[in-house]
Length: 231
Image (cartoon, rainbow, N blue to C red; front, side):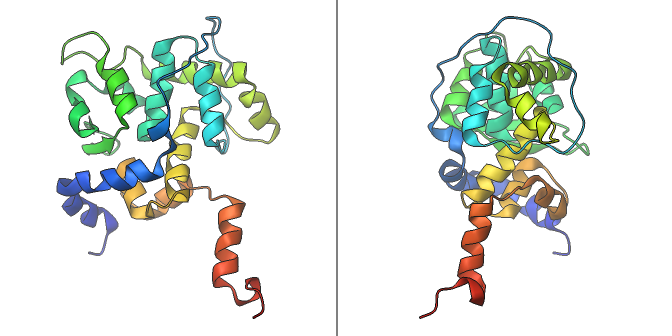
């Protein structure tokens, strides 16, 4: 195929084959449903514009712990678990959640394309536990509400101030970047990350992946002649 997106179209029928790799690579797979520390309800700060914060798995957990309520915690967990956009989360319906198969159907994502994303069992069960029939929204938050949830947690956890001092923006999109980076760093091929993100071009996916210097150093030592010890 001349274009990676064409190849991914052929692989959609076999999206279940990604599940084992997803399970092995995504940190959220082993996270419990809680604990959750609920903070005070108040409006979040204005969002900054700039390069996205490069969150570690432990920093993502800090965001969840500083959610104002369980619904906002679940929204942030779902963004990180699936890598979907805040608009895609806000428009998802309960009928789109396939708990038994660990999948969520994203209808009419960016570019008007439908796609499947994968979920860990705990996030799936938390989403399933919500009230409402199959035609109701998966969560009761608008895209703006999801953004405010992340902004509040980022401010109250101290991560907003930390990353702002470094010139980074901590928004909902930072969780999408973290999703891509953490999967890739744990061994998921970039083309598989591309499919889950819904990118039509692999170059776009590469922009989302922020490899650690530890990974780069290990690769340097493995592949560069000068990085190898003399025998």
